[in-house]
Length: 60
Image (cartoon, rainbow, N blue to C red; front, side, top):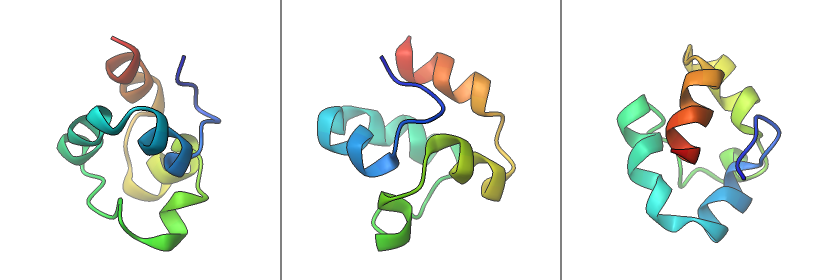
């Protein structure tokens, strides 16, 4: 299960098919080395994305 505290690098390693959902949400920095260590919550805060909605989509 994907949570707010899931690191983007871990998410993409375990669920590479979820990259499209992140890109659609506005996270276009998935290849950035800094993003790999960020949690979903941290990345959403930077990009102005509702983390709860994104977690629902990722787990849906």
